[in-house]
Image 1 (cartoon, one colour):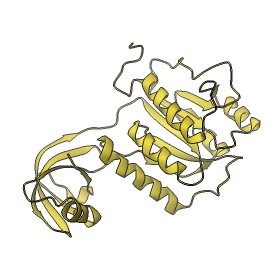
Image 2: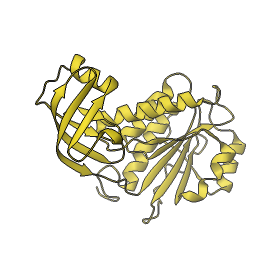
Image 3: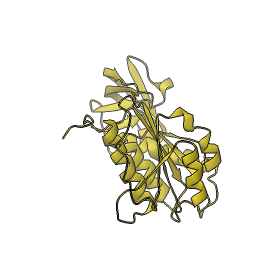
Length: 246
């Protein structure tokens, strides 16, 4: 079923109005007609099964048939991702959304080869996360936060029960499985194409981060982010499996 994002102001318990590009796409591209059913969501956990009453390229009016409210529940995973060049960050935002990551923090580390992202770029990443919600069925998008330096990120470290930094030079310990059973939040840090500097890893250690590897293969930064997030979500029980389940 087609999922459509709507502003909360356009949604009431009885009806919804879909405007702008969403209305044009549904009417001109998908050619939906009155009587078709879609799901609308407001990005705040509310999703509604809706029947289209009237439709044109400017606006669509729908009748709410059923609704459900889903709030975010712990444990939460936050990904601090060193800013990557080109479209690689776009893919990280998309896949992190699909994997249920709660927040992505663009990270400005020593070996980043691109300048700090502008506010317009951050808003673009937020839109990518919103579009990914439509595909994966997630009721609310991840939060794309303001970019931070490694030092600034350390100020947020106390917010999290578990903290890991993925480091290619960590050969002894793989991704740790020693997560407290009461863990309600986790922060993972993934470096840029050139990896972390030793002093950045030392800084993270001093703030309670455990260095961890992702196996013997050398992964691209974007692959490490996606693989690391997937493993952590499995360990946290956020992929529909309980921890320890075979």
